[in-house]
Length: 299
Length: 335
Image (cartoon, rainbow over all chains, first blue to last red; front, side, top):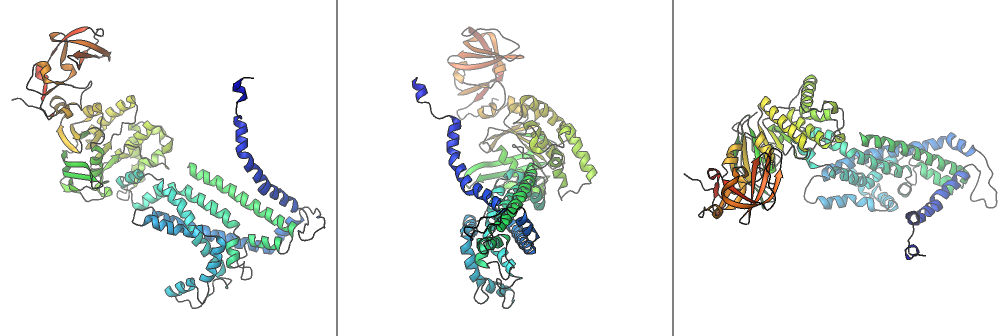
Protein backbone atom coordinates (compact mmCIF):
# COMPACT_ATOMS: atom_id res chain seq x y z
CA UNK A 1 0.00 0.00 0.00
CA UNK A 2 1.40 3.33 -0.90
CA UNK A 3 2.18 5.89 1.75
CA UNK A 4 -0.15 8.31 0.12
CA UNK A 5 -3.11 6.02 0.47
CA UNK A 6 -2.32 5.20 4.08
CA UNK A 7 -2.37 8.84 5.14
CA UNK A 8 -5.33 9.86 3.06
CA UNK A 9 -7.72 11.80 5.29
CA UNK A 10 -11.47 11.64 5.46
CA UNK A 11 -13.44 12.45 2.36
CA UNK A 12 -15.18 15.84 2.14
CA UNK A 13 -18.51 14.17 2.66
CA UNK A 14 -17.35 12.36 5.79
CA UNK A 15 -15.98 15.60 7.21
CA UNK A 16 -19.20 17.42 6.55
CA UNK A 17 -21.19 14.72 8.32
CA UNK A 18 -18.77 14.88 11.20
CA UNK A 19 -19.59 18.54 11.62
CA UNK A 20 -23.35 18.47 11.20
CA UNK A 21 -23.89 15.03 12.78
CA UNK A 22 -24.01 16.16 16.43
CA UNK A 23 -26.38 19.00 15.59
CA UNK A 24 -28.68 16.73 13.65
CA UNK A 25 -28.73 14.23 16.50
CA UNK A 26 -29.50 16.90 19.07
CA UNK A 27 -32.25 18.36 16.91
CA UNK A 28 -33.78 14.94 16.43
CA UNK A 29 -33.65 14.22 20.15
CA UNK A 30 -35.00 17.46 21.56
CA UNK A 31 -37.05 18.95 18.73
CA UNK A 32 -38.24 16.42 16.23
CA UNK A 33 -38.90 13.49 18.55
CA UNK A 34 -41.06 15.49 21.00
CA UNK A 35 -42.91 17.02 18.07
CA UNK A 36 -43.70 13.63 16.57
CA UNK A 37 -44.60 12.32 20.03
CA UNK A 38 -46.92 15.25 20.62
CA UNK A 39 -48.62 14.70 17.29
CA UNK A 40 -49.12 11.06 18.25
CA UNK A 41 -50.48 12.03 21.68
CA UNK A 42 -52.88 14.51 20.13
CA UNK A 43 -54.89 11.61 18.72
CA UNK A 44 -55.27 9.90 22.12
CA UNK A 45 -57.01 10.56 25.44
CA UNK A 46 -53.68 10.44 27.32
CA UNK A 47 -53.49 11.93 30.84
CA UNK A 48 -49.90 12.24 31.97
CA UNK A 49 -50.87 12.14 35.66
CA UNK A 50 -52.80 8.87 35.41
CA UNK A 51 -50.07 6.31 35.61
CA UNK A 52 -50.74 2.83 34.33
CA UNK A 53 -53.76 3.82 32.27
CA UNK A 54 -53.19 2.93 28.62
CA UNK A 55 -54.04 5.89 26.31
CA UNK A 56 -56.67 5.09 23.74
CA UNK A 57 -56.80 6.29 20.17
CA UNK A 58 -59.64 8.80 19.77
CA UNK A 59 -59.10 10.09 16.22
CA UNK A 60 -59.77 13.77 15.59
CA UNK A 61 -61.87 14.17 18.75
CA UNK A 62 -59.31 16.37 20.53
CA UNK A 63 -58.96 18.67 17.54
CA UNK A 64 -62.71 19.05 17.20
CA UNK A 65 -62.94 19.80 20.90
CA UNK A 66 -60.28 22.48 20.75
CA UNK A 67 -61.67 24.20 17.68
CA UNK A 68 -65.23 24.17 19.03
CA UNK A 69 -64.31 25.61 22.39
CA UNK A 70 -65.28 29.25 22.60
CA UNK A 71 -62.74 29.98 25.33
CA UNK A 72 -59.92 28.96 22.98
CA UNK A 73 -60.99 31.57 20.45
CA UNK A 74 -61.01 34.16 23.17
CA UNK A 75 -57.39 33.28 23.99
CA UNK A 76 -56.50 33.45 20.33
CA UNK A 77 -58.08 36.88 20.17
CA UNK A 78 -56.08 38.01 23.20
CA UNK A 79 -52.92 36.70 21.53
CA UNK A 80 -53.77 38.35 18.20
CA UNK A 81 -54.41 41.75 19.73
CA UNK A 82 -51.25 41.46 21.85
CA UNK A 83 -49.25 40.69 18.69
CA UNK A 84 -50.90 43.42 16.63
CA UNK A 85 -50.20 46.20 19.09
CA UNK A 86 -46.71 45.09 20.10
CA UNK A 87 -45.58 44.68 16.48
CA UNK A 88 -47.13 47.96 15.39
CA UNK A 89 -45.60 49.94 18.26
CA UNK A 90 -42.22 48.25 17.94
CA UNK A 91 -42.11 48.90 14.21
CA UNK A 92 -42.95 52.59 14.52
CA UNK A 93 -40.92 53.40 17.63
CA UNK A 94 -38.04 51.13 16.59
CA UNK A 95 -37.73 52.75 13.15
CA UNK A 96 -38.10 56.19 14.67
CA UNK A 97 -35.34 55.60 17.19
CA UNK A 98 -33.12 54.10 14.51
CA UNK A 99 -33.59 57.22 12.36
CA UNK A 100 -32.61 59.41 15.29
CA UNK A 101 -29.61 57.31 16.27
CA UNK A 102 -28.42 57.16 12.67
CA UNK A 103 -27.55 60.84 12.93
CA UNK A 104 -24.16 61.80 14.18
CA UNK A 105 -24.17 63.45 17.59
CA UNK A 106 -22.16 63.35 20.76
CA UNK A 107 -23.00 60.45 23.04
CA UNK A 108 -24.62 58.53 20.22
CA UNK A 109 -22.94 55.24 21.10
CA UNK A 110 -23.61 55.52 24.82
CA UNK A 111 -27.25 56.23 24.13
CA UNK A 112 -27.53 53.22 21.82
CA UNK A 113 -26.11 50.99 24.53
CA UNK A 114 -28.53 52.35 27.12
CA UNK A 115 -31.52 51.88 24.84
CA UNK A 116 -30.53 48.30 24.12
CA UNK A 117 -30.28 47.36 27.83
CA UNK A 118 -33.89 46.16 28.41
CA UNK A 119 -33.40 43.53 25.72
CA UNK A 120 -30.63 41.93 27.72
CA UNK A 121 -32.73 41.32 30.84
CA UNK A 122 -34.48 38.08 31.64
CA UNK A 123 -38.20 38.25 30.71
CA UNK A 124 -39.17 36.77 34.08
CA UNK A 125 -37.20 39.45 35.90
CA UNK A 126 -38.77 42.12 33.71
CA UNK A 127 -42.21 40.74 34.56
CA UNK A 128 -41.49 40.87 38.29
CA UNK A 129 -40.10 44.37 38.44
CA UNK A 130 -42.81 45.84 36.25
CA UNK A 131 -45.36 44.56 38.81
CA UNK A 132 -43.67 47.01 41.16
CA UNK A 133 -43.60 49.79 38.58
CA UNK A 134 -47.33 49.24 37.98
CA UNK A 135 -48.16 49.28 41.69
CA UNK A 136 -51.11 51.71 42.13
CA UNK A 137 -49.78 53.12 45.42
CA UNK A 138 -46.02 53.31 44.99
CA UNK A 139 -45.40 52.37 41.34
CA UNK A 140 -43.18 54.66 39.35
CA UNK A 141 -45.23 54.16 36.17
CA UNK A 142 -48.42 55.33 37.84
CA UNK A 143 -46.57 58.24 39.40
CA UNK A 144 -45.17 59.39 36.05
CA UNK A 145 -48.54 59.11 34.29
CA UNK A 146 -50.22 61.09 37.07
CA UNK A 147 -47.47 63.67 36.96
CA UNK A 148 -48.32 64.54 33.37
CA UNK A 149 -52.06 63.90 33.48
CA UNK A 150 -53.91 63.36 36.72
CA UNK A 151 -55.86 60.13 36.34
CA UNK A 152 -56.14 59.54 40.06
CA UNK A 153 -55.57 56.03 41.30
CA UNK A 154 -55.53 53.31 38.64
CA UNK A 155 -54.31 49.72 38.56
CA UNK A 156 -52.70 48.60 35.31
CA UNK A 157 -52.59 44.93 36.33
CA UNK A 158 -55.78 44.75 38.35
CA UNK A 159 -58.11 46.23 35.74
CA UNK A 160 -59.29 43.97 32.95
CA UNK A 161 -59.37 46.86 30.47
CA UNK A 162 -55.88 48.10 31.35
CA UNK A 163 -54.10 44.77 31.85
CA UNK A 164 -53.82 43.96 28.09
CA UNK A 165 -52.16 47.36 27.65
CA UNK A 166 -49.89 46.66 30.60
CA UNK A 167 -48.35 43.66 28.83
CA UNK A 168 -48.19 45.54 25.49
CA UNK A 169 -46.28 48.37 27.18
CA UNK A 170 -43.78 46.05 28.86
CA UNK A 171 -43.13 44.02 25.72
CA UNK A 172 -42.70 47.21 23.67
CA UNK A 173 -40.35 48.63 26.30
CA UNK A 174 -38.30 45.45 26.27
CA UNK A 175 -38.16 44.64 22.56
CA UNK A 176 -38.31 47.94 20.67
CA UNK A 177 -34.50 48.06 20.94
CA UNK A 178 -34.38 44.88 18.89
CA UNK A 179 -36.30 46.34 15.93
CA UNK A 180 -34.29 49.50 16.38
CA UNK A 181 -30.96 47.68 16.16
CA UNK A 182 -31.93 45.81 13.01
CA UNK A 183 -33.34 48.97 11.39
CA UNK A 184 -30.15 50.78 12.32
CA UNK A 185 -28.13 48.11 10.54
CA UNK A 186 -30.35 48.67 7.50
CA UNK A 187 -29.91 52.43 7.64
CA UNK A 188 -26.15 52.15 7.95
CA UNK A 189 -26.09 50.09 4.75
CA UNK A 190 -27.53 52.95 2.68
CA UNK A 191 -24.62 54.61 0.88
CA UNK A 192 -24.33 58.31 1.56
CA UNK A 193 -23.91 59.21 -2.11
CA UNK A 194 -27.56 58.34 -2.73
CA UNK A 195 -28.59 61.14 -0.38
CA UNK A 196 -26.09 63.46 -2.03
CA UNK A 197 -27.52 62.63 -5.45
CA UNK A 198 -31.04 63.24 -4.15
CA UNK A 199 -29.95 66.50 -2.56
CA UNK A 200 -28.52 67.71 -5.86
CA UNK A 201 -31.65 66.46 -7.64
CA UNK A 202 -33.51 68.84 -5.33
CA UNK A 203 -35.55 66.20 -3.57
CA UNK A 204 -37.23 67.22 -0.33
CA UNK A 205 -36.34 65.46 2.94
CA UNK A 206 -39.67 63.67 2.73
CA UNK A 207 -38.93 62.45 -0.81
CA UNK A 208 -35.51 61.25 0.32
CA UNK A 209 -37.18 59.27 3.09
CA UNK A 210 -39.81 57.74 0.80
CA UNK A 211 -37.54 57.04 -2.19
CA UNK A 212 -34.27 56.08 -0.51
CA UNK A 213 -34.54 55.40 3.21
CA UNK A 214 -37.78 53.46 3.39
CA UNK A 215 -37.15 51.00 0.53
CA UNK A 216 -33.67 50.31 1.89
CA UNK A 217 -34.76 49.71 5.45
CA UNK A 218 -38.04 47.89 4.78
CA UNK A 219 -36.55 44.38 4.30
CA UNK A 220 -34.69 44.79 7.58
CA UNK A 221 -37.79 45.99 9.42
CA UNK A 222 -39.85 43.11 8.07
CA UNK A 223 -37.24 40.62 9.22
CA UNK A 224 -37.22 42.11 12.72
CA UNK A 225 -41.02 41.91 12.82
CA UNK A 226 -40.92 38.26 11.75
CA UNK A 227 -38.68 37.42 14.70
CA UNK A 228 -40.83 39.46 17.07
CA UNK A 229 -44.02 37.93 15.69
CA UNK A 230 -42.84 34.37 16.25
CA UNK A 231 -41.58 35.25 19.73
CA UNK A 232 -44.75 37.01 20.78
CA UNK A 233 -47.00 34.25 19.46
CA UNK A 234 -45.45 32.00 22.09
CA UNK A 235 -44.99 34.74 24.72
CA UNK A 236 -45.21 33.18 28.16
CA UNK A 237 -42.71 34.01 30.93
CA UNK A 238 -43.00 37.79 31.10
CA UNK A 239 -46.81 37.77 31.06
CA UNK A 240 -47.06 34.96 33.63
CA UNK A 241 -44.84 36.87 36.02
CA UNK A 242 -46.66 40.13 35.42
CA UNK A 243 -50.35 39.19 35.36
CA UNK A 244 -50.51 35.39 35.39
CA UNK A 245 -53.03 35.76 32.61
CA UNK A 246 -55.41 37.79 34.76
CA UNK A 247 -57.43 39.53 35.84
CA UNK A 248 -59.92 36.81 34.99
CA UNK A 249 -58.56 35.80 31.64
CA UNK A 250 -57.97 39.30 30.23
CA UNK A 251 -54.33 38.61 29.44
CA UNK A 252 -54.49 34.83 29.15
CA UNK A 253 -52.58 34.24 25.93
CA UNK A 254 -52.96 30.98 24.03
CA UNK A 255 -49.62 29.77 25.36
CA UNK A 256 -50.62 30.40 28.99
CA UNK A 257 -53.90 28.60 28.49
CA UNK A 258 -52.04 25.71 26.89
CA UNK A 259 -49.71 25.40 29.87
CA UNK A 260 -52.70 25.30 32.23
CA UNK A 261 -54.49 22.61 30.25
CA UNK A 262 -51.34 20.54 30.00
CA UNK A 263 -49.70 20.87 33.39
CA UNK A 264 -52.47 21.95 35.77
CA UNK A 265 -55.38 19.94 34.42
CA UNK A 266 -53.09 17.28 32.93
CA UNK A 267 -55.21 16.90 29.79
CA UNK A 268 -52.19 15.73 27.82
CA UNK A 269 -53.93 14.45 24.69
CA UNK A 270 -56.21 17.47 24.42
CA UNK A 271 -53.40 20.00 24.98
CA UNK A 272 -51.17 18.17 22.48
CA UNK A 273 -53.85 18.77 19.86
CA UNK A 274 -54.00 22.43 20.88
CA UNK A 275 -50.20 22.68 20.66
CA UNK A 276 -50.19 21.14 17.17
CA UNK A 277 -52.81 23.64 16.04
CA UNK A 278 -50.71 26.52 17.37
CA UNK A 279 -47.62 25.12 15.71
CA UNK A 280 -49.31 24.78 12.33
CA UNK A 281 -50.70 28.31 12.64
CA UNK A 282 -47.36 29.97 13.33
CA UNK A 283 -45.59 27.78 10.78
CA UNK A 284 -48.15 28.66 8.10
CA UNK A 285 -48.15 32.37 8.86
CA UNK A 286 -44.36 32.37 9.04
CA UNK A 287 -44.02 30.80 5.61
CA UNK A 288 -46.48 33.12 3.95
CA UNK A 289 -44.73 36.07 5.59
CA UNK A 290 -41.29 34.99 4.40
CA UNK A 291 -42.64 34.62 0.84
CA UNK A 292 -44.11 38.11 0.91
CA UNK A 293 -40.92 39.48 2.45
CA UNK A 294 -38.77 37.99 -0.31
CA UNK A 295 -41.08 39.49 -2.94
CA UNK A 296 -40.60 42.92 -1.39
CA UNK A 297 -36.85 42.42 -1.22
CA UNK A 298 -36.69 41.52 -4.91
CA UNK A 299 -38.68 44.56 -5.90
CA UNK B 1 -27.39 78.06 -17.81
CA UNK B 2 -25.18 80.36 -15.88
CA UNK B 3 -21.70 81.76 -15.57
CA UNK B 4 -19.95 80.20 -12.59
CA UNK B 5 -17.12 81.85 -10.69
CA UNK B 6 -14.93 80.60 -7.89
CA UNK B 7 -13.08 83.23 -5.91
CA UNK B 8 -10.22 82.49 -3.50
CA UNK B 9 -11.63 79.11 -2.54
CA UNK B 10 -9.94 77.33 0.38
CA UNK B 11 -10.95 73.96 1.69
CA UNK B 12 -9.37 71.66 4.26
CA UNK B 13 -10.55 68.27 5.47
CA UNK B 14 -10.50 67.62 9.22
CA UNK B 15 -8.82 71.01 9.70
CA UNK B 16 -5.52 69.53 8.57
CA UNK B 17 -5.48 68.07 5.09
CA UNK B 18 -5.39 70.85 2.54
CA UNK B 19 -7.69 69.95 -0.32
CA UNK B 20 -8.05 73.24 -2.17
CA UNK B 21 -5.86 76.31 -1.97
CA UNK B 22 -6.80 79.63 -3.46
CA UNK B 23 -8.86 78.37 -6.37
CA UNK B 24 -9.88 81.12 -8.77
CA UNK B 25 -11.68 80.29 -11.95
CA UNK B 26 -14.47 81.47 -14.17
CA UNK B 27 -16.61 79.18 -16.27
CA UNK B 28 -18.41 81.25 -18.87
CA UNK B 29 -22.02 80.58 -19.78
CA UNK B 30 -22.08 77.79 -22.35
CA UNK B 31 -18.46 76.83 -21.81
CA UNK B 32 -17.15 73.29 -21.54
CA UNK B 33 -14.55 73.55 -18.81
CA UNK B 34 -12.36 70.56 -17.98
CA UNK B 35 -10.44 70.14 -14.75
CA UNK B 36 -7.41 68.00 -15.36
CA UNK B 37 -5.10 66.45 -12.82
CA UNK B 38 -4.05 63.20 -11.21
CA UNK B 39 -6.07 61.67 -8.39
CA UNK B 40 -5.81 63.64 -5.18
CA UNK B 41 -5.33 66.95 -6.96
CA UNK B 42 -8.68 68.30 -5.72
CA UNK B 43 -10.80 67.91 -8.83
CA UNK B 44 -13.72 66.17 -7.15
CA UNK B 45 -13.55 68.48 -4.14
CA UNK B 46 -13.91 71.48 -6.45
CA UNK B 47 -17.07 69.98 -7.97
CA UNK B 48 -18.49 69.14 -4.58
CA UNK B 49 -17.88 72.68 -3.35
CA UNK B 50 -19.76 74.10 -6.33
CA UNK B 51 -22.63 71.66 -5.75
CA UNK B 52 -22.73 72.59 -2.07
CA UNK B 53 -22.00 69.06 -0.89
CA UNK B 54 -18.88 70.32 0.91
CA UNK B 55 -18.65 73.37 3.14
CA UNK B 56 -15.78 75.60 2.09
CA UNK B 57 -13.43 77.24 4.59
CA UNK B 58 -13.29 80.58 2.85
CA UNK B 59 -13.90 82.12 -0.55
CA UNK B 60 -16.97 82.65 -2.68
CA UNK B 61 -18.99 80.73 -5.23
CA UNK B 62 -20.91 82.91 -7.66
CA UNK B 63 -23.60 81.94 -10.16
CA UNK B 64 -24.24 84.76 -12.64
CA UNK B 65 -22.58 87.21 -10.22
CA UNK B 66 -24.88 86.14 -7.41
CA UNK B 67 -23.12 84.87 -4.31
CA UNK B 68 -24.49 81.43 -3.42
CA UNK B 69 -21.65 80.32 -1.13
CA UNK B 70 -23.97 79.54 1.76
CA UNK B 71 -26.92 78.09 -0.19
CA UNK B 72 -28.10 74.51 0.23
CA UNK B 73 -27.41 72.09 -2.65
CA UNK B 74 -31.09 71.97 -3.60
CA UNK B 75 -31.41 75.72 -3.99
CA UNK B 76 -28.29 75.97 -6.17
CA UNK B 77 -29.94 74.08 -9.01
CA UNK B 78 -26.95 72.19 -10.34
CA UNK B 79 -26.86 68.66 -11.69
CA UNK B 80 -24.14 66.23 -10.80
CA UNK B 81 -22.93 63.03 -12.46
CA UNK B 82 -21.13 61.08 -9.77
CA UNK B 83 -18.20 58.82 -10.42
CA UNK B 84 -20.00 55.89 -8.82
CA UNK B 85 -23.27 55.58 -10.67
CA UNK B 86 -25.39 56.42 -7.60
CA UNK B 87 -28.69 55.45 -9.18
CA UNK B 88 -31.64 54.90 -6.88
CA UNK B 89 -31.46 51.11 -6.61
CA UNK B 90 -35.11 50.37 -5.82
CA UNK B 91 -36.50 52.02 -8.92
CA UNK B 92 -36.64 51.54 -12.65
CA UNK B 93 -34.58 53.48 -15.15
CA UNK B 94 -37.67 55.54 -16.02
CA UNK B 95 -38.27 56.41 -12.37
CA UNK B 96 -34.61 57.28 -11.90
CA UNK B 97 -34.74 59.65 -14.85
CA UNK B 98 -37.96 61.30 -13.70
CA UNK B 99 -36.72 61.73 -10.13
CA UNK B 100 -35.12 65.17 -10.58
CA UNK B 101 -38.23 66.38 -12.41
CA UNK B 102 -40.48 65.46 -9.50
CA UNK B 103 -38.76 67.77 -7.08
CA UNK B 104 -41.22 69.97 -5.19
CA UNK B 105 -39.14 72.91 -6.50
CA UNK B 106 -40.30 72.32 -10.07
CA UNK B 107 -43.78 71.07 -10.54
CA UNK B 108 -44.05 69.75 -14.08
CA UNK B 109 -47.06 68.18 -15.79
CA UNK B 110 -46.75 64.41 -16.22
CA UNK B 111 -46.91 64.72 -20.00
CA UNK B 112 -43.89 67.00 -20.09
CA UNK B 113 -41.90 64.73 -17.77
CA UNK B 114 -42.62 61.79 -20.05
CA UNK B 115 -41.53 63.69 -23.17
CA UNK B 116 -38.31 64.88 -21.61
CA UNK B 117 -37.35 61.46 -20.33
CA UNK B 118 -38.08 59.81 -23.66
CA UNK B 119 -36.00 62.38 -25.51
CA UNK B 120 -33.03 61.87 -23.21
CA UNK B 121 -33.39 58.08 -23.28
CA UNK B 122 -33.28 58.12 -27.06
CA UNK B 123 -30.23 60.35 -27.08
CA UNK B 124 -28.38 58.00 -24.74
CA UNK B 125 -29.79 54.86 -26.41
CA UNK B 126 -31.41 53.42 -23.32
CA UNK B 127 -35.04 53.55 -24.51
CA UNK B 128 -35.35 49.75 -24.36
CA UNK B 129 -34.09 49.75 -20.77
CA UNK B 130 -36.58 52.22 -19.32
CA UNK B 131 -38.61 49.54 -17.58
CA UNK B 132 -35.58 47.73 -16.15
CA UNK B 133 -34.60 48.11 -12.54
CA UNK B 134 -31.51 50.23 -12.03
CA UNK B 135 -29.64 47.31 -10.51
CA UNK B 136 -30.24 45.09 -13.54
CA UNK B 137 -28.10 47.19 -15.87
CA UNK B 138 -24.51 46.81 -16.98
CA UNK B 139 -21.93 49.35 -15.87
CA UNK B 140 -22.11 51.27 -19.13
CA UNK B 141 -25.89 51.41 -19.06
CA UNK B 142 -25.90 52.57 -15.45
CA UNK B 143 -23.53 55.39 -16.26
CA UNK B 144 -25.63 56.44 -19.23
CA UNK B 145 -28.69 56.55 -16.96
CA UNK B 146 -26.68 58.62 -14.49
CA UNK B 147 -25.74 61.05 -17.26
CA UNK B 148 -29.35 61.05 -18.45
CA UNK B 149 -30.56 61.88 -14.97
CA UNK B 150 -28.32 64.94 -15.03
CA UNK B 151 -29.35 65.99 -18.54
CA UNK B 152 -33.16 65.81 -18.09
CA UNK B 153 -33.15 69.19 -16.50
CA UNK B 154 -31.60 72.51 -17.37
CA UNK B 155 -29.66 73.53 -14.29
CA UNK B 156 -27.23 76.40 -13.81
CA UNK B 157 -24.32 74.10 -14.50
CA UNK B 158 -23.66 70.42 -15.16
CA UNK B 159 -21.00 68.99 -12.90
CA UNK B 160 -19.48 65.74 -14.13
CA UNK B 161 -17.03 63.72 -12.11
CA UNK B 162 -15.16 61.36 -14.46
CA UNK B 163 -18.47 60.16 -15.91
CA UNK B 164 -16.86 58.00 -18.58
CA UNK B 165 -14.07 56.46 -16.54
CA UNK B 166 -15.83 53.18 -15.83
CA UNK B 167 -16.85 52.50 -19.41
CA UNK B 168 -15.05 50.43 -22.01
CA UNK B 169 -12.93 52.24 -24.59
CA UNK B 170 -15.39 52.09 -27.46
CA UNK B 171 -18.39 53.27 -25.51
CA UNK B 172 -16.26 55.96 -23.94
CA UNK B 173 -15.42 57.32 -27.35
CA UNK B 174 -19.02 57.26 -28.56
CA UNK B 175 -20.31 58.95 -25.46
CA UNK B 176 -17.53 61.51 -25.59
CA UNK B 177 -18.65 62.63 -29.03
CA UNK B 178 -22.27 62.46 -27.94
CA UNK B 179 -21.58 64.56 -24.88
CA UNK B 180 -19.86 67.25 -26.91
CA UNK B 181 -22.80 67.35 -29.33
CA UNK B 182 -25.28 67.61 -26.51
CA UNK B 183 -23.31 70.43 -24.98
CA UNK B 184 -23.21 72.34 -28.25
CA UNK B 185 -26.94 71.78 -28.86
CA UNK B 186 -28.01 72.85 -25.40
CA UNK B 187 -25.31 75.50 -25.15
CA UNK B 188 -24.71 74.00 -21.73
CA UNK B 189 -22.25 75.13 -19.08
CA UNK B 190 -20.29 72.06 -18.05
CA UNK B 191 -17.54 71.56 -15.52
CA UNK B 192 -16.00 68.23 -16.26
CA UNK B 193 -13.40 66.39 -14.21
CA UNK B 194 -11.06 63.86 -15.73
CA UNK B 195 -7.54 62.54 -15.69
CA UNK B 196 -7.93 61.25 -19.24
CA UNK B 197 -6.11 63.60 -21.60
CA UNK B 198 -8.03 62.51 -24.68
CA UNK B 199 -11.27 63.51 -22.99
CA UNK B 200 -9.76 66.79 -21.92
CA UNK B 201 -8.51 67.81 -25.35
CA UNK B 202 -11.55 66.66 -27.33
CA UNK B 203 -14.21 68.06 -25.02
CA UNK B 204 -12.79 71.19 -23.50
CA UNK B 205 -13.18 74.80 -24.51
CA UNK B 206 -10.90 75.51 -21.59
CA UNK B 207 -8.74 73.35 -19.40
CA UNK B 208 -7.73 74.05 -15.82
CA UNK B 209 -4.79 72.01 -14.60
CA UNK B 210 -4.82 71.17 -10.90
CA UNK B 211 -1.84 70.22 -8.80
CA UNK B 212 -2.14 69.44 -5.11
CA UNK B 213 -5.18 71.63 -4.63
CA UNK B 214 -3.93 74.56 -6.66
CA UNK B 215 -4.71 75.63 -10.20
CA UNK B 216 -1.39 75.83 -12.00
CA UNK B 217 -2.57 76.83 -15.46
CA UNK B 218 -5.77 77.66 -17.28
CA UNK B 219 -6.01 77.79 -21.05
CA UNK B 220 -7.44 76.30 -24.22
CA UNK B 221 -6.33 72.74 -25.01
CA UNK B 222 -3.91 74.19 -27.60
CA UNK B 223 -2.38 76.61 -25.12
CA UNK B 224 -1.93 73.92 -22.50
CA UNK B 225 -0.33 71.64 -25.07
CA UNK B 226 1.87 74.10 -26.89
CA UNK B 227 2.60 76.51 -24.11
CA UNK B 228 2.69 74.80 -20.72
CA UNK B 229 4.10 76.92 -17.88
CA UNK B 230 5.78 74.05 -16.07
CA UNK B 231 6.99 70.49 -16.52
CA UNK B 232 3.97 69.31 -14.53
CA UNK B 233 1.52 70.90 -16.97
CA UNK B 234 3.49 69.75 -20.01
CA UNK B 235 3.16 66.18 -18.82
CA UNK B 236 -0.64 66.35 -18.50
CA UNK B 237 -1.27 66.33 -22.25
CA UNK B 238 0.24 64.42 -25.12
CA UNK B 239 0.59 60.76 -25.94
CA UNK B 240 3.24 59.41 -26.11
CA UNK B 241 4.38 61.52 -23.18
CA UNK B 242 6.63 64.54 -23.58
CA UNK B 243 10.39 63.89 -23.23
CA UNK B 244 11.95 65.74 -20.30
CA UNK B 245 15.72 65.82 -20.79
CA UNK B 246 18.73 67.61 -19.37
CA UNK B 247 19.64 70.69 -21.45
CA UNK B 248 23.29 69.81 -21.98
CA UNK B 249 22.32 66.91 -24.26
CA UNK B 250 21.48 69.43 -26.96
CA UNK B 251 24.21 71.94 -26.08
CA UNK B 252 21.83 74.11 -24.07
CA UNK B 253 24.22 74.23 -21.16
CA UNK B 254 22.62 77.02 -19.16
CA UNK B 255 19.24 75.32 -19.15
CA UNK B 256 18.41 72.67 -16.55
CA UNK B 257 15.72 70.75 -18.35
CA UNK B 258 14.01 70.84 -21.68
CA UNK B 259 10.71 69.40 -22.82
CA UNK B 260 10.52 67.87 -26.27
CA UNK B 261 7.30 66.44 -27.75
CA UNK B 262 7.85 63.12 -29.54
CA UNK B 263 6.45 64.49 -32.82
CA UNK B 264 9.13 67.21 -32.85
CA UNK B 265 11.90 64.70 -33.42
CA UNK B 266 12.92 63.78 -36.92
CA UNK B 267 14.56 60.45 -37.60
CA UNK B 268 16.94 59.55 -40.43
CA UNK B 269 19.62 62.17 -40.42
CA UNK B 270 20.79 64.89 -38.09
CA UNK B 271 23.59 65.75 -35.75
CA UNK B 272 22.55 63.40 -32.94
CA UNK B 273 23.20 59.66 -32.90
CA UNK B 274 21.50 57.10 -30.65
CA UNK B 275 20.47 53.46 -30.54
CA UNK B 276 16.99 52.08 -31.10
CA UNK B 277 15.55 50.49 -27.93
CA UNK B 278 12.15 49.54 -29.29
CA UNK B 279 9.56 50.42 -31.88
CA UNK B 280 5.82 50.36 -31.40
CA UNK B 281 3.58 50.47 -34.43
CA UNK B 282 0.26 52.11 -33.56
CA UNK B 283 -1.11 52.11 -37.12
CA UNK B 284 -1.19 55.77 -38.02
CA UNK B 285 2.05 56.43 -36.20
CA UNK B 286 5.06 54.57 -34.86
CA UNK B 287 6.69 55.30 -31.54
CA UNK B 288 10.43 54.76 -31.55
CA UNK B 289 12.32 54.67 -28.25
CA UNK B 290 15.93 55.79 -28.62
CA UNK B 291 18.83 55.53 -26.21
CA UNK B 292 20.71 58.81 -26.48
CA UNK B 293 23.65 59.15 -24.10
CA UNK B 294 21.86 56.96 -21.56
CA UNK B 295 18.62 58.94 -21.79
CA UNK B 296 15.51 57.40 -23.26
CA UNK B 297 13.85 59.55 -25.88
CA UNK B 298 10.50 58.81 -27.49
CA UNK B 299 9.95 59.88 -31.07
CA UNK B 300 6.71 59.50 -32.96
CA UNK B 301 6.81 59.10 -36.71
CA UNK B 302 3.86 59.30 -39.10
CA UNK B 303 2.99 55.94 -40.61
CA UNK B 304 5.15 52.89 -40.10
CA UNK B 305 8.86 52.94 -39.51
CA UNK B 306 11.16 49.99 -39.97
CA UNK B 307 14.21 49.55 -37.78
CA UNK B 308 15.74 46.85 -35.66
CA UNK B 309 16.74 46.93 -32.03
CA UNK B 310 20.22 48.28 -31.21
CA UNK B 311 20.46 49.74 -34.67
CA UNK B 312 22.29 53.07 -34.78
CA UNK B 313 20.06 55.93 -35.68
CA UNK B 314 20.54 59.62 -36.43
CA UNK B 315 17.99 62.24 -35.51
CA UNK B 316 17.35 65.93 -35.34
CA UNK B 317 15.10 68.07 -33.18
CA UNK B 318 12.83 70.97 -34.02
CA UNK B 319 14.56 73.68 -31.95
CA UNK B 320 11.66 76.10 -32.26
CA UNK B 321 9.46 73.68 -30.38
CA UNK B 322 11.84 73.01 -27.50
CA UNK B 323 10.32 74.00 -24.14
CA UNK B 324 12.88 75.25 -21.63
CA UNK B 325 12.53 74.86 -17.87
CA UNK B 326 14.44 76.22 -14.92
CA UNK B 327 15.62 74.50 -11.73
CA UNK B 328 12.16 74.78 -10.19
CA UNK B 329 10.62 72.99 -13.22
CA UNK B 330 9.04 76.31 -14.29
CA UNK B 331 9.02 77.43 -17.87
CA UNK B 332 11.66 79.87 -19.13
CA UNK B 333 10.04 82.20 -21.63
CA UNK B 334 12.16 83.75 -24.36
CA UNK B 335 11.63 87.18 -25.70
